[in-house]
Length: 329
Image 1 (cartoon, rainbow, N blue to C red):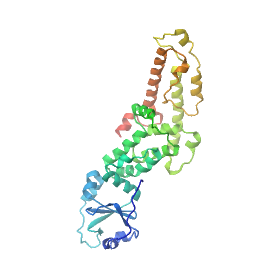
Image 2: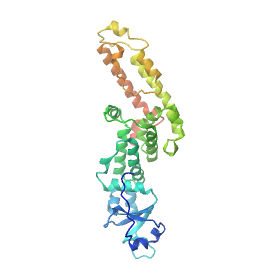
Image 3: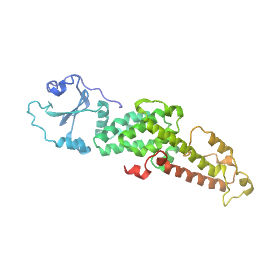
Image 4: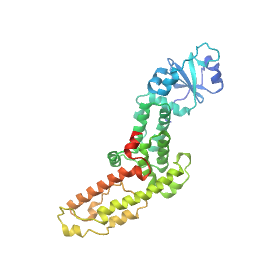
């Protein structure tokens, strides 16, 4: 949750003090930022109260629209929970997440302040994503999903753009685990292939560590460990094509020089010795191959095609549905 204003303790109106529902929560107080004097309903969430507009929430949420269609008893009905003439509805959500949900609904510029660091971003977005999913607020949920997809791409083109960005930041392992867990909880399965790829590239000690409730399940960690070995084989196959079993291009201009480049290559040995598989990584040490320009272009094309093929199979590597099925969900 980011930058929440302080609720007001003073000047609690008598109608608030007299509400039986609020008396059950003696610390219930108004939350200033979302206490609108022309609001038509009061939500009691934890120990905080929010006076908001039924019309605004109904326009965004199918669930709230259905809730407000339920006939309300007359205001003078004995025992009916009222505050300043507004019906009181109690929600059993974390108050900080409900505040973030209201910010997403009421503040059009709220998404302009998305944090750059993944950990901060997850704290900022989690409540909105969870509750927009729960209350079927489609537009808000889609905004949250779109932001997550900038960090966990779902197309090879988006992946390429992300890793090429000069402002790209490396993710902490705990944050990747949190993101994958959040995606699972909220049904955002399309970001899981790349999230699992990031998990599979972690150190083995971290993958098998008990990271608590924020970590993915042991079953999913096992999937990532199996996927790790599949990625290693994919990397070996990909590297083999343009390094270990290099063949000169059809238009090679230096057959003797390029032909001599065939066979075990020091770059192959470097890749083979790497701790974690990186089949999606862009190979850049083309000058070390000591071949002509035409052969470099030929090898680059093989390398690019291989990386794209690995990306296409990423969901299957981690026992998920194909990309097109994930994106339909």
